[in-house]
Length: 286
Image (cartoon, rainbow, N blue to C red; front, top):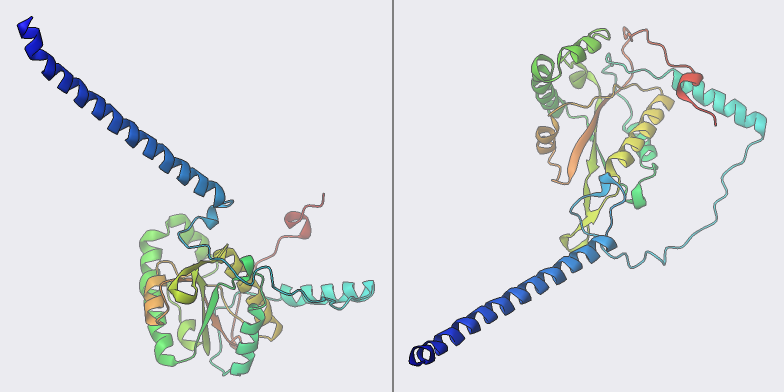
């Protein structure tokens, strides 16, 4: 009995330690569950509905969001016969559009280029964020630097990155990594997508669907060029973006989407004799 009486305080101490450990562990688990619940709640509040929207930009409150005035909108309404005529005329104009790699050095009025870019800027965009920057280069020295960067990377693309099938598919339209038109064209228009905006205070602002928005603007830009009788070739230089962004001193939130040499077609310009798909192959009526 004396032995048991002597051991009892130690047993009580051990049990006390065990109980305290269980209590601490219980508190930790409770805190972890609360933290997870807060995260889940936050996720429910900010649920992404499209893969393109998954980014780390902040959703900032727009104080004038609900105060934005709406104004009457009444565009021209044409008689049916005029609609048909205009639609056919515009189709005929756009059906003449071709990708042209032989561009004249003949000067083009800068005001024309400005109007073309203004037209591209009328494009719709996610939440009207207008996530585009059009960099217009006419300086010969800068144009040559751009050509050097593009040809350096394009040679590697053709020889190593693109694969044999891709190179063979391009061979029939007689295109290589040599881009003489980057020196010759009076203007190079480099289209950058703004992956996020910069709000007041330096915080990031979400640019929803920025690549889709800028791609739509590029389509309008191509139509505007065709409308004034200028030509271009849509160029997406693989692996050139970072070097061109640095050359043109563009900020980190801008990524190169497209490079367009712009000018009149040269007197000896040729294009591949390609045919477009008929309406029945590109449209489905339901």
